[in-house]
Image (cartoon, rainbow, N blue to C red):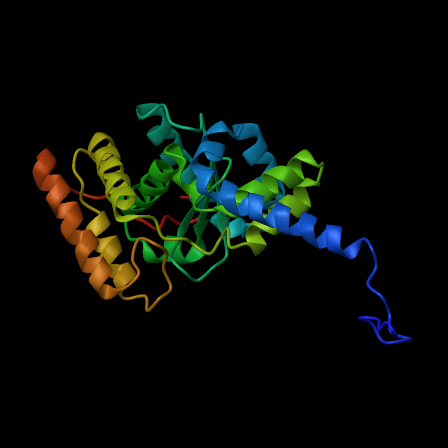
Length: 268
């Protein structure tokens, strides 16, 4: 009886290492998939110093690329954040860094390592310091609770492993940005409500009233998609404004009061 080969004569036979390599890759991918369900635990265990390494290169790029005409505004933002931290200690980060990025979208990004990036679009849209304090405090609330880390999902695990393997800061930052770090991921409704409550509490402590956010949200609602997770649609804007009014009413916080004008001129 003539035996026949599964591979015709002259054809390339599979290399012996391909099967084990595919199995290893499948094992790694499967492990990451399973571990992704425990990102909350990983985020809680992650040292803040590791997060700061991941965003260090991004911070240097932002700091170097900030328009000089925005220097006074950046200093004012840093002062607002310092006052928030002084009044509301605790949470994941002992302090925060504030930078300005050129982007027409009106967004405040809260990033790993306690990095807050405010777009020029947000600075040009806001008409009061109170509104910016609300937006900054809202993102700080997410950072304090580790929610910004958890939105990274499996990327958090991959970057953590690459950090342990000795990847340079520039490549870690590039991977995070490439994975959508600045894409502004939405948070669950409960997390958004908690962040709003914290932000209004900040306003009440700083200014004695919670006036300011309503005008910002209305302006964001007219931006036709050029805004972040605070407002995703006119309907979402209406819901968010109603939620803020309900919180203020529940806490007996006044929505009337003078606001601090913004923008401020450079050197002002």
